[in-house]
Structure formats: structure tokens, C-alpha cells
Length: 247
Image (cartoon, rainbow, N blue to C red; front, side):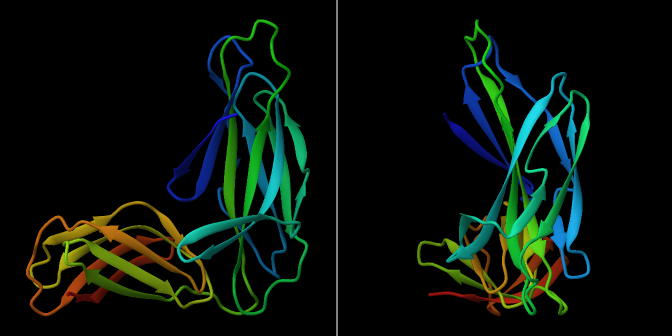
């Protein structure tokens, strides 16, 4: 079985599994709403709606995943911290299923905790004349558990220009909540001419660091050693001046 992993705007991940179960390539269509789960002491449970837009019933299984980061890498481990009901279910053709998600462990007092919730379509019995493939959909949602205290991301940015003219842009989240950076661009602080940009969405969890290797679009003079950063995030727009270190 082969897995193809895709990302959609950083909010969810979809994996398509292929197996020889039909005479042509087919893909079931199910959708989940909302696409982000938020839990807290004040709201320890929530509900998801799973909509089956296909012409046949779908069997879907859930999986709870602990989510952390280390040195910019994503770390996923199976967990029993989340309660998902029902854990496996059948959604009738053109039908809907409500799935409830709750937290089994106490809510942290100071920092947000992150999980992923996967919803995986289960293959039905193969047809006798199977010669093609069936595409099985897997949707993975982020789950954030808010602490009792106020939460906010707090980013510190820096940029380093290497001798080979590539740039490393680094941000550290010193806050107690995640932030999702959709895209950012760097401008010359004086002329506001585009210097470099990044458009691949990425999460930065509390206490973690994310960095990007960029190739500047223009070799601009930076006489005052600063760049103008404009970023779009799930916490709003960021407009800041950051130092550019050069060799």
C-alpha cells in the first residue's frame, strides 16, 4: 500500500491510500467540519460533523495522535488522551455523522497542548472483477487544548545572509500558544522593494523554533541592516522590522 501525503493550507492533512479493489480509479468524498478542534476547561468536549457526499456508505475509523515539535521537525505518537465517540462508524450515502471529541487528561495550567485527530476511510470488500484502484481518504485535523491562563504566541524573528547569498529566516515562539504562519515576505526597510518571500504554511508550537532557507529575489542593499517583515498568520497580521545579519 502506497501513501501520498498532501497539505491543505496547513489546516489539515489528507492521505490517499491505493488498493486494487475496483475496475477504475475511484475516490470517496467525505468532509469534516470544523477543520480545527479547540478544547479547554470551560469547553472540555466538542462535536464534529462528518458529511459523506458519495453515492455509497463509508466506514471511517478515528485515531488520536499526540503532536509535538523538536528542532523544526514534527513528532507524532499515538495517544489515549483524546476521547472520540464513536471511534469507528458508518456514514450512509449522502448522510452525516456527528463525532464528539473530549479530553481524558486534566487541562494544563500554563501552556497549550497539541494533538492531531485522524479520520481514515476503511476499504470495503473488493469486487470480484477488480482491476483498478480505489482511493481511500484520510483527513487529519489539528486539536489544541487551551490552558486555564490566557494564551498567545510570542515570536522573535531573525535573518542571516550566508556567503552563498542564501538567507536563513528563523522565528522562535516564546509564547504559550501555537501560531500558524501562512506566508511572509521580506522587504527592503527603506525602499519597500521585495527581497524574499515564503508561502508554505507552517505551525510553530509553544517553545519551538521554525526556520526557512530562502533565495532572495533581488540583491538589495541593506545599509541600515534591517528588513521589513510582513506575515499572515492565524493570529492576525505581523508587521515588524528585523535585523539582517551578514557575514
